[in-house]
Image 1 (tube, rainbow, N blue to C red):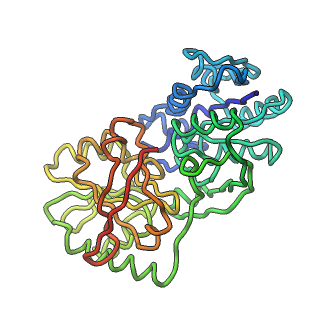
Image 2 (cartoon, rainbow, N blue to C red):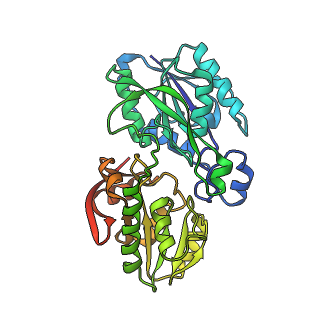
Image 3 (cartoon, rainbow, N blue to C red):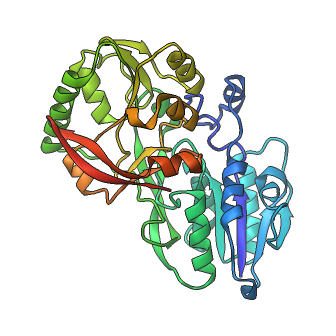
Length: 370
């Protein structure tokens, strides 16, 4: 059994600094204080991975931060077939994939986001299965495990012959439009991926109907009533949160895909990154975080709102989190998910919570860690 293992070192760097992506913006991300996270996420997966030694598994990988650095402290057998540069590009990803295919790998395990998935699919198509360790800012594709830990479990089952393969969407997001606060997503292609229910995320879904719009208005009316003028509200991304801002007469100012802050009916911070949020809450005694799950994936933290980091959540307190979602979205989402990057915090966030789903209506929903 041969497992190809590839890491996109720059994936996810734009998340905490609010860039909504890293493609073409590495230097800007670094200037804003971003730190690489992909190698750490890849190492988390490899820390968890325990393949039966009798299966004689070999990991085929790249040098440095493109793979080897996440393996050197582990007992996994590996071989480097592609050298890593100090600054890698999408061409390195594609070239490495071509070599992996020549090596006859059985599965390509990668760490990155939608852009990495798209680059890999450009080379391998449906010729071999791929599986993503989530590390990007945007992860709307259905080829990702819901966390590094879950990716390890899927690889173990794949190696033991215990998974089936399914077609999974590779989603293509227009990054320029995304940074202009417009969500434009289309299906780029269908890859093959190992499927283990509850361990693989669903593709991004956009819920839009008359009943959905009415439900969002009901949630917004209720939020307008319970939001105290003396409290600071960190407001996440999405159309449900945006509808609340509209009912507060802030619709023209609130970002649809960014993280903003509201106090006393006024926008006091727009399109904030992690550092902005930490500075803002340092001078506030009463702060709440308001978020809505992403599409059919069910993530309330860790996808599309990495600015609301583990550090921000810990400062605010998990008791001060408000989750809002329409009844349809809740019914189509088996459970909510968190993947903050902190296993300790994810455990604390797990359990049953109340989700505001209408005017003075809430529903109990289970939260699981990725």
